[in-house]
Length: 466
Ligand SMILES: Cc1cc2nc3c(=O)[nH]c(=O)nc-3n(C[C@H](O)[C@H](O)[C@H](O)COP(=O)(O)OP(=O)(O)OC[C@H]3O[C@@H](n4cnc5c(N)ncnc54)[C@H](O)[C@@H]3O)c2cc1C
Image 1: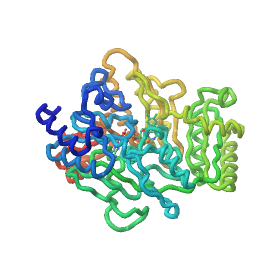
Image 2 (image 1 turned 120 degrees about the vertical axis):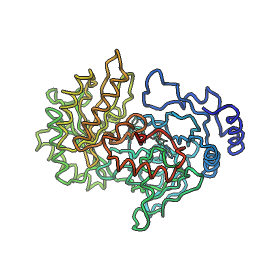
Image 3 (image 1 turned 90 degrees about the vertical axis):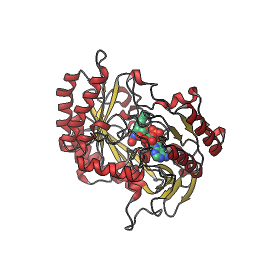
Image 4 (image 1 turned 60 degrees about the vertical axis):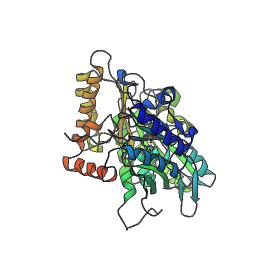
């Protein structure tokens, strides 16, 4: 925390830059900014407090705030919707939270070029609604789309359930405007999806978790609204049978948008045969003819893999309500955590066997009902699930040990600790399991180049050098 004398002067400067309505400083106003959806150690919940929260509306205002912070080496924490799962917003070093909630304007839409330029604080839901008025579609659909912002989704390298056909957030970013740690404004490159000139600077900020600069404008690739969509849903004997069908679908090259496999919790809602314990569904988007042809192909593959097809009405009802059932979209409570691990397809079974047969008994973790297995099916496959830590002694310490073991397991199998929830403070120390010293040193070098005083969201993402 800043000494009071410095704080008074910084407050005066910030009010001068943004006006009083652009600044929060009372403790009661700062409390919601102490944490995000990551559960920190219980006794630490309100330990970390920002000194100020600013609510800029323009790049110029962000620039002024960053210049004030830079002159005194005050930490800056850019904030979007606050929905990240890994403690990226916890103000471990105090400082100024830059809440982008008022930077929520759609700046420019180009229908012929299929792109949109937007401020970072607009939610994905609002952006999707705005695009629909122009017949355009934000292909990115994540469980948190009502909360998550464009800036947050870029900065966490967010994952969409339509990733097989349309890619993830990282694949949509064309160009960014970023206020760097010294207050200068960087335009990463032209607003084009493809160029062979220059370094691909915008890629640096995808998944950077606010550690390299503050995104103040983003140009994104969008698509025409699809004429039709369909979900094809099959029930299987167990999760592994559903996975076999998913593998066949992927190997067939059929043009589906994304899918999932998981265990069935509520058979009646889905009208699933009682002996079928798992489901696999695939989404299809395109013209009516395409959707019809692809869906037919998927139905054949599902039946050919021993699956029982859900009836059309149930499947389409499922499409509109399935976010509720979607593993990542459910709220976490108490001693629970969600798994979002990238594991190569051929190692999936080994991953889950080791997790539930070796790691779980050692630490007493238990899968939540119906949450032992789940897989996002497609090229950015993600192994999910949710588990509960038992109460009792050393809960926090055991939790850290579990995280480390899962990280070692996933990376040992050639995967990644986090397919979509990023690093934050939760996984920071386990990054040494995933990246070599040389790779981490390169990342520290990039960070130092862009942020020599380490004021941009310090303490997140990259582990300190030992
Ligand atoms: C119910 C639920 C469902 C979820 N489902 C998904 C899912 O399907 N797919 C998925 O990928 N994730 C999912 N998540 C995780 C989370 O929603 C995403 O990581 C989301 O993209 C974060 O966006 P946000 O705006 O809330 O970012 P925040 O949590 O506000 O911030 C996240 C990080 O981005 C940085 N940041 C934010 N704005 C800027 C900016 N303008 N410039 C620079 N840095 C910035 C912050 O400093 C922080 O490090 C889910 C979370 C919940 C709670």
